[in-house]
Length: 255
Ligand code: BEZ
Image (tube, rainbow, N blue to C red; front, side, top):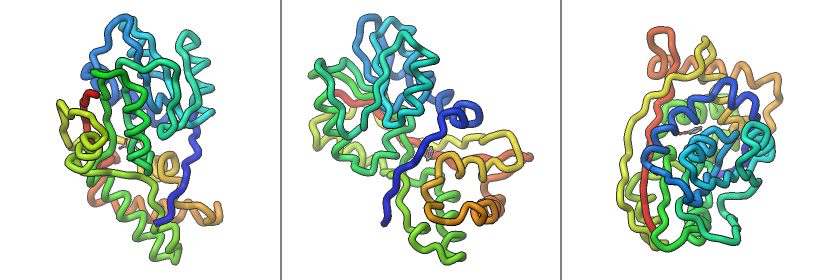
């Protein structure tokens, strides 16, 4: 499989896909931050959840691999420390009491390095609270994207691996192998209403799945997107709304 980096559009992310952060709000409840704790928000995006965590009085640091996202986060929440950093290469002088990560770890194909990096930056007894796409996540969208790309002869694009959606057993095993104790884990369905317009799937793929279209002429992309959108209409559209067939892993583990 080919693997590819995604370039983020931080403005579009906040304007049209703010549900990503909204759904992360109850993950903050699972984190249960308290005043004075040092907490790392791994993959903080534009900083909304880092800010929510900081309201507890915790000392929050947000990191993201996208400089565009970090630029927006710094402007929105100047009182919080934000750094551009990769999940596989976290480096800080002092370990954290907790690492929090919402909707990010499925972007990190080198999962073992990410888990190792998190582990090294937690104090003994510290906790990792994460949510990510699990096995079967957005499956209809992914399968139909591959089908349409193949139908049009874009074989390399169709084989692109954009995300890593592990089963619960697989990810818990990786965490345990590195030394974590998995205290809570669930793999649940969360049908997610997408952007409120007729092109919800096209918009979603444009925002998150752009890597599938690398080297395809810009002029050819809209027709491909529409074809994908039509092919998931039977499964992902009802009552004049588009839905993503999200399947999430939610885990709390301690070092
Ligand atoms: C997710 O949060 O599950 C997700 C978001 C964007 C692309 C793929 C998965």
